[in-house]
Image 1 (cartoon, rainbow, N blue to C red):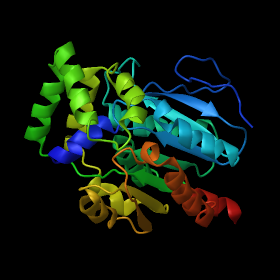
Image 2 (cartoon, rainbow, N blue to C red; image 1 turned 180 degrees about the vertical axis):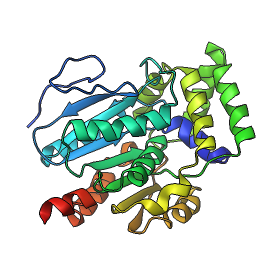
Image 3 (tube, rainbow, N blue to C red; image 1 turned 90 degrees about the vertical axis):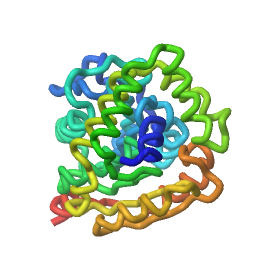
Image 4 (tube, helix red, strand yellow; image 1 turned 90 degrees about the horizontal axis):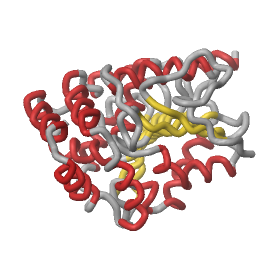
Length: 290
C-alpha cells in the first residue's frame, strides 16, 4: 500500500432496537471479538456495513437509514480498537475476516451484501475472495487492495503506535482535512476516530503489508461494484478491480473520500441500481435456488 493508500486506509475510515454483539447477550452461540455490530431492521435482505480504519459504525447512519426504508436489514460494524472499542491482541484484519464469515453462518445470513469503505473495502475484498460461496453482492467504496512495502509499513506503524496524545490528534486532523468536501459532516466521525487505539491502527497497516489482498482478487465470484470519489486515486483503484471477474466502476462526481457523506442521494442511487440488478448475488443463493 503506497503512501496515499495508507493515508486513506487510516481515515477511511421496520426497525428493531440496536444490538451491540460485543456486549449484549443473545440467543446466538458465536460472539465476535474483532468487531461489534449494530443490527437494525427486520427479516429483509442482509447488508453488512464495514467502515474505514478508525471509524465508527455511525459513519453508515444515512446509508443504513436509506436501506431500512427499502426493507433491508443492516449490520453495521465497528472494529476492535477503533472509536473507543478495546483492541484485540490478534491480527485485526485476518481475525475480522475469519470472524465475519463465522458471524454470517451463525446468524444464517443468506448471501449477504457486503459494503466496505476504505479499509473496510479492503476487508470486503478479502472476505469475498476467502469465502466466494458465502457472500452476495460486494460494494467497495473508494478503496483498493494494494499493500505497501513492509519496511515502509513498519515505519508508518511505529509512527502511529509511538505518537503522543497531541501527535495522534494532530495526525487524525491532518488526514481528515482533505477527505471530504463537507467537513462539517465529517467532524463527528473524526472525533470518534480520535478515541481509537493507536497501536490497533498501526498494527493493521503493517498486517496488510504482510498479507496483501490484491493477490486474492481473482478468487471472487460475487458481483462487485466499485464506487469511487472524483479524486486522484481513481486510476489505481480501477486497475486493481480488473482482477475481479464480475465488476463495474462508478465515480460519484464532486465527492471526496467519504463518498457516502459527501453526496448521500447520489451514493444511495448508485447502491440501489446495483442491488436491483443483483437481487440475490453469490454462489450460495444460486445453490438455494436450484
